[in-house]
Image 1 (tube, rainbow, N blue to C red):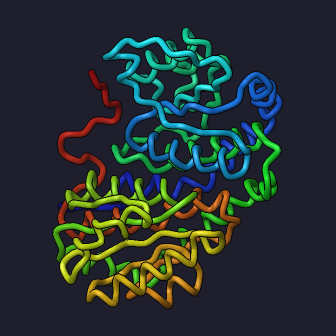
Image 2 (tube, rainbow, N blue to C red):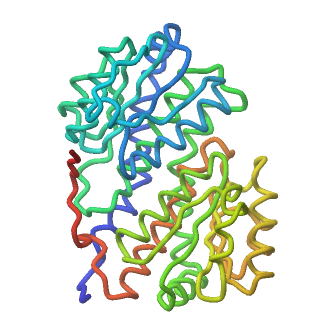
Length: 352
């Protein structure tokens, strides 16, 4: 791949601090609307595909660990293919789509409303069909995203989900001031990652393998899934995104000197020590372990590492994915792939 300047993907990664600031400032005042819906619901059903589905995984862990509500991921085919009617009374259905134009997601949200659910949309499309279908539309302010891999639309979705979690409250250990810190911290993290001597080294080493395992747990699990997706779609490498609990139940056998592991974690929280232990186990098996975040403990346990955000665990994923995005863009160029237009993909994906 020949480039004469930054890729669109890299430019849009750099736009995330301001996109996050606009989104957070715009959505925090909407908490009373969310709270009103929360009073009529017991649990949350997330409806999404692709990167938005990985954002939904963060949303699920957030509402369960901090808002004290059951969160589940929808299977849209129950609505669109099987046409089954379910009792969704007491359910808050949250549909997530960067464009708001994916017909399957709009149809599933309409189905949920028809089954008795209250509805919320999270989308970057203010006048999109999804925004119009929902009772409350939390519209992100990412601006136009031109590269096919989602970067700023993904992190602003996470910001909207963080606001959702605050609105569903009372949040245990969650504070709006933590969320307001995110844009500056993401800006700092972009600069730190770009200046890291480990970045080109990790990219060069990953360019020599056919695939990798990407693992995290708890609130960081969605980040692991999103990083694995980015590696697959932008670099054409095999990447398996797994909770480290699932990884230890058998698939760890694939980790060897030709299949490294990328391990993601917040710098604090109940899953950090398990991630550090996994890094030691991976290296003990003769494989390379690359850390993203996790503070000094994970960095020391890994072969190489990239910095993570200095944020509380509940908002850490908003920054934790950013070094991974930068690594993927660097790795794609290392492999001669244009990350802006991955083969076989479009910005808006329609499914049957």
